[in-house]
Image 1 (spheres, helix red, strand yellow):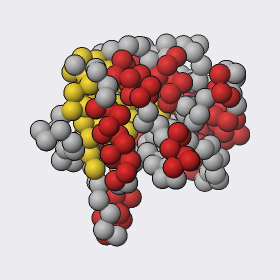
Image 2 (cartoon, helix red, strand yellow):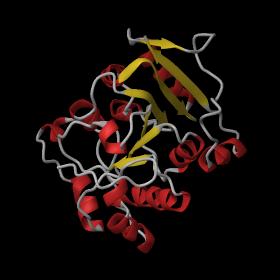
Image 3 (spheres, rainbow, N blue to C red):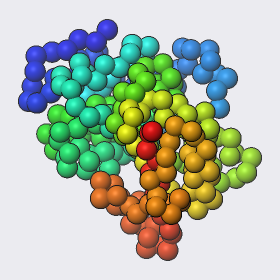
Image 4 (tube, rainbow, N blue to C red):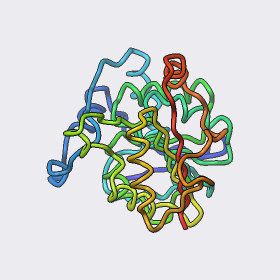
Length: 258
């Protein structure tokens, strides 16, 4: 059940129960829906070790920033306490990009999806330090959330930055960018909404281009029909800067919902 406490700042936090670190990990690893056992996942759940600060974030900050798992439809106007553009980032890692975007664009509501509890804890700590009121986080499988909880035409942007490329051919089926996934994202975008992707693995960039280019509901924003210049809205992360120093290329893609 979603319970919205009194307004604080420019949005209302989502009140939930306070999970400890073991609960947080179990919430992701458990598969209450039998269909999850049959699905090919694009990620491997790694519990990792949370710092004391990250454990505190789960205890103290999750009630305001976290959206509990389940089948309840996501009503973003209720969750954030306002009607505003919704930007969804899938697989935010430690939240570096999400925090930068939320800080630079306070008029938008930002939702992060990540399956690794330490990364979620790190993001919540950053939100606390930056006093961000326009961020919410879900610790669950992005495909399940999009399928079961996100309404059609409910998102203004979907961000998929540097997903696991699964470079070995036998693992390509695990790549998150597949025809069914792109079609699903396209349905969840509002007309005019944008799917933005980036990768530093050229074969995966070519795969993304082919798959997204084959979706009838999406139009490539590239004037040359391939890649776009890194948008100002996507900050250069430490991960990306390290890759640049090593001579790695980065490919950005943008596809608009027709």
